[in-house]
Length: 266
Image (tube, rainbow, N blue to C red):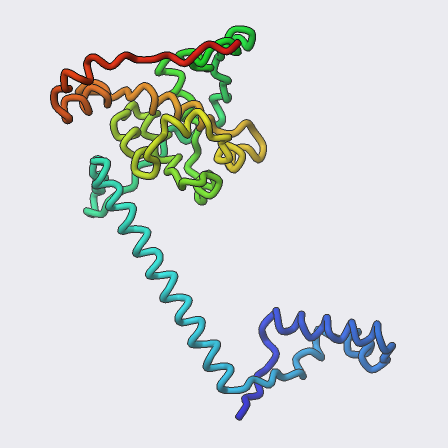
């Protein structure tokens, strides 16, 4: 059994019109040309033959898709709440109506007021002879200032550009707010070895940055590498010192192990 439905949907109207135009091109039909000449009124005379079983299948498919989107949003919200509990994020303040009020992202005008700054590096003639760090130390204020350039994107494409799915806007915002402990924990939530990736990764996240459409992208690679390698935290010492205290006293044999430096590059 079928239903005869009026041709109302814009996509259906366009589909029929294009089909008639192709028919005119291939056959030179004058009747089809007259239809196209008065298409604005004549298209209402067309009907769509819709099998009822097919119509029911489409409705079930649309319902399943809506339920899947709702379940995906619930899973995403649960995952973000678990990550917030993992990194010890501070609770979001409540408004006058008792509902949670989302905290604004960093400095809303940071990407307008602050330009991307290239971090200083050692001269090439010097660093080709050793294995030491390429980048020179940068003041903390410079990292916080560059973190302020990160925008409150509706869809942060840097997540898609990062192979690990790092929560880049989150820890850029935390760095801007001088919450270094929360920033490094948020980085470790998705990346076990930021000390390596911060140096070796070609930073496709910067190439995916929305700000890069019409301006220099947000600094991500260097800021990530510096905060992971320094392990700076506001209180309680560095990550290395806390790890050492957590593991306990080292064995005497480990104290006698000599650190062997890599050979210089000839």
